[in-house]
Amino acid sequence: MICVRLRLPARRSALAVLILAVSFAATACGSSSRSPLASVQSGAAKTLATTGVWYLVWSSDAVFGPTQRPVGERGASVFSSNEAFGALDLDGLPDGKGGTAFLLFLPRSLYVSLAPTSSLSLPKGKSLVGATLDERTDAAFPGFVEQTEALNPQLLVDELAWGTTSATDRGKQVINHVPFTRYTASVDLDQAAKKAKGPVRIAIDAEIGALGGHGHHVIPVTVWLDGPGHLARVQAPVPGSGFGRVLASIDGFGQAVGSAHPTAKQTVSLAQLASSLPAGRSPFVAFTVSS
Image (cartoon, rainbow, N blue to C red; front, side, top):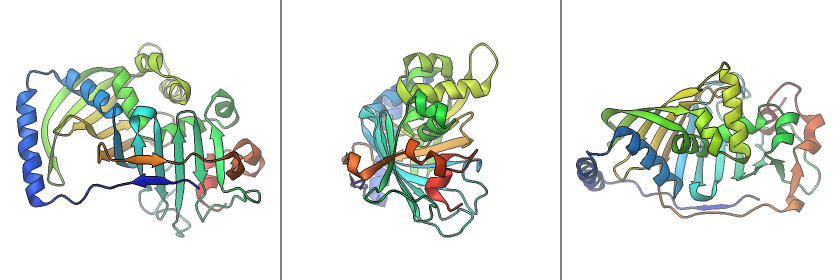
C-alpha cells in the first residue's frame, strides 16, 4: 500500500496574509536588480531543492475521454530526489462513479493503486501495478512514459531549470489573496533534453517529436513566483501527451513528505497486464475507468 505522510499548511489568517504581502513587497524590492531570466532560473533551482504540495489540472480530455468536469490531481513531491505521490480525482469521468487512483512516482518507475472504477483484475495478493519507465516500456506502450511524467509537476520544474532561455516580467498578480510575480518564459526543449536522464529525457524527446520540424523546439511557459522565489504556479503545454496545457499550483514548500516504497509481493508489472489493456488507449484509462 502506498503511504505518504503529509502535513498540509494551515489556513492563512488575515494577519498571515498581510505579513506575507509585506514580505513579498520587501523581497520584490530587494531583488529588483535581478533580470526576469535569472529570477525564473533561480525559482526553478530553489523549487528543485525542496518539497512541495501541489494540485495539477490539464486542458485536454484526450487521455480519459469526455469529462463532466476537469479531472484534477493532488499530490506532494520531494523535488530534490524526484519522488512524488499523486491522487487522481475521478469524479468528473463519464461513468459518474467517481473514486480515486493513487500514484507513486519514483525516479525511474511508477506504481499505481487502481481506482474502484477500474475494470482491471489484479492477480490474487497484488494491490499495485508497477512500471519501469524506460525505453522498453515506451516502445511497448507508446506515450505512456510521457503521460506519466506529465502527471508529475517535476517535469515542468526540470524543463524550466534546464531549458529557460528568456523571460519577461508581467508584473504583480494577486491570486486568492496571495501576491505573486508573473513571468512568461521560453523553454528550449532541445537544451533541456541535453541535461535530462531516464524517463524525463524520454518525455522531453517525445515533446520534441510531437512539435516536429527542425531547429530549436521552444514552448511558452507562464510562471508565478511567490515572495521567497519558489515556482508557486507553472502553466505549460506538454506536446504529444494528450493532456494539452498543464497547470501546476505548488504550495507548502518545505513540508515533511515521506513515502513507503512498495514491495515485489504487492506488485504486478504493467507488462503482465498488457493483454487486459484496451487496444489503442492509454493504460491510464484501464487504471481508472471501467471498459
